[in-house]
Amino acid sequence: MTEIGNDPIFRHRNERQSHFALWLEPWAEEYDIPNGSEIIVNMRGSPRGEPEIDVFDDRATIYAPLGSFVDVVIDGIVQNAELASATITIPSDSSLGTRELTQILFGSFPDARPGGNPLPKSKWRTFLGKIWRT
Figure: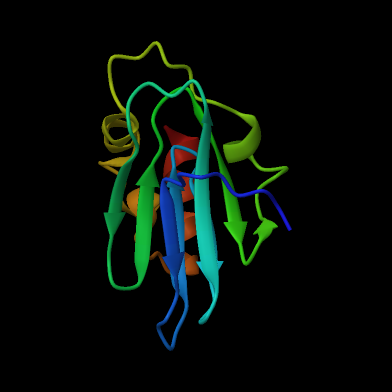
């Protein structure tokens, strides 16, 4: 069991009959929250600003502020201890926020899944081909 902060930036218990997804930007990490499970997201580091959070019926997207790290905990177990969101921060000297940077980098590539939009696996090859050719 991990220590959970007093004021998490996001807390959700999945009461749906199906899975709920959490997408973390700018790290492009996706977490699947099974029915009956609870996810808690804590922020640490030296964030510049507040996180932006979009919540939909089947998923949520968190745009963490620049200069931050996050800890993702599902049912009391840290999920991202070795992943980028827990170990790599985005430099906070940009005048843009995470949502704006994500849209600039990936907004013209809908297959890039900005904000965790679903993408059939077969389209990944097409998308990766576009990146490597440019």
